[in-house]
Amino acid sequence: MVPFCYNMHLMIEVPKGYHFEEADQFGTMLSKNDGKEAFVLINREFGLINHVLGYLPSQYTEFFIDQKIAPVRVLDIGAGRNSVAANGLQERYKEKVSVIALDLLPANQKSANIMSIAGDATALPIRDETIDVVYSFQLLSHMENDGTYQKGTAVLREIARVLKPGGVAILDEEFYSVQSPMNKVFTKFFIEENCFMFQKSGNNSEPGTISPGLPRPILFLGKNPLDPGIFRIQEKLVGNF
Image (cartoon, rainbow, N blue to C red; front, side):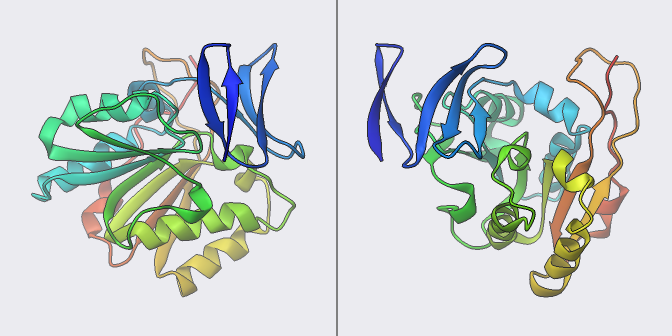
């Protein structure tokens, strides 16, 4: 890690092999030096992420709360430097949840209720089988992909490792949905990682108050054995209106 002066006011430690750049359309981005990855540095509210992911993160969190798990441990991967979504989740459920906010960049905020950590999603600095719910928005679809899905699969394997038996993860992954090799990844995780995986179509739409963009596939990863009640939870809304 090396320091980098950003906006002339703040020293930020930049992960090795990355740099900051300005893009007219997206604003500030954290880009890999070889140009194969680029992450937009914006803060997003939990309400928006929850909406785009069909309200599944909140429904699964509430499912575990109803199972008298206290607190429900939630992991936000790609949480941003201000951990805005993680804070919104914590404010919604109070002491019923414990949230870990992970990002490549170190967080510039401290909260007694949020554990903000800097780390790589391909090597999560989290103990095995300690997380109930994982969500991530626009992470894997921006990661380096050479057609073999090695890096994305490494993230999925890490998620599988840290999930408790019965735990679930929800991700939006556009690039997986159009690539046939993803079927091999599904099979690999079902056999080797003891996980259940499927994709939601993302074609449902109904009126709402947030307009996040076009419908997108949702990737579900659940660590066996799963409570049958998990499968009765349905996505409520993914749409542009």
